[in-house]
Image (cartoon, rainbow, N blue to C red):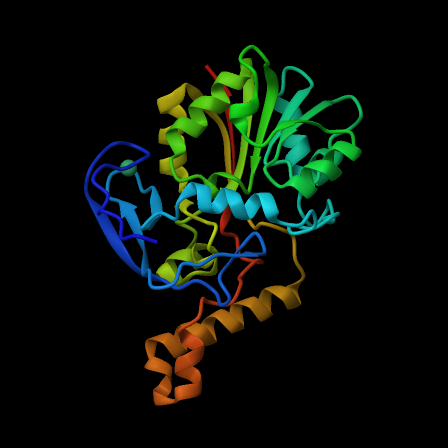
Length: 303
Ligand SMILES: [Zn+2]
C-alpha cells in the first residue's frame, strides 16, 4: 500500500480539524472477511473529527482491495445461522415493524440471508451482497439478490425498509452511501442501521486499541452525533437511537471479556511489565469484547 495524504475535510460533515487517537494494530494474520490481505509496512491510526465525532482509520484501505476479499469470503464467514435471539433479531424486527409503512425490505450486505429469515413471510425480501457464496445461499433461502452493491439497484426500484446491519463501518465514504440508500427508499421509507458506537464507555476506555477498531475491514466509526448529522444531511429524520450490545450474552461471557480486556490494557499501560512475552502480546490487537454495549441501533425515516 502506498502512503496516503493526511485527510483535510471530514467525510461526514465537511469540517476540518481531527484528533489522532492513537495507533491501530490489526490482528495477525491480517484478514478481511476471513481472506488474507497484505497491509505490510503500513501504520494505521484512529482519527476523529473534532466537529461531528465521526472517526475513521487512517490511511484508508483501498475499497477495491476490501471488495476483492468480500467477494472471495465463505458463505459462513459471519455465521450460517446465527441464533436469532442472541443476535437480537426479535428486537430489530419489532422495532422496524413499528415504523414501516410497507413490506418491501432491502438488506444491504444481506450475507446468506440469515437476517431476512427473521422477517415473516409477509415481507418481500431483497438484498445486495458482494460475497459470491453467501449471495448464492441467500437466493436459495428466497432472497431476491439484486447484485453486489447498492449500485446494482435500478433507478425506480423502491423499498419500504433498508437494513444496514454491520455494514456502514465497512464504508469509507459515508455520505454518498447514505444518499444512495435514501434514493432507494419510498417516501416515508425507513433506514435501520446497526454499527459500532465509538463513544461507548468500553471503546473510550481502550482507545485506538479497542477490538472493534482493530478489525481490518472496519474503516469508519460512528457515534450518535455523527450518524444523526449524516442522516440529516442527506434527508432523513431520526426515529430512534439505542445503545446495545451486538448480541445477547451470558454473565460468564461478560466477565470473561471484561477480564481479558482489563489484563490487556494493564499490560499495554505497564509496557508489558518489562517481560518480553507480555510485550509481544500487547503488539497484537486487543481481545474481542463482543459482550460490551458498544453498538447502536439507529432508525431514520425519509423526509
Ligand atoms: Zn465531521
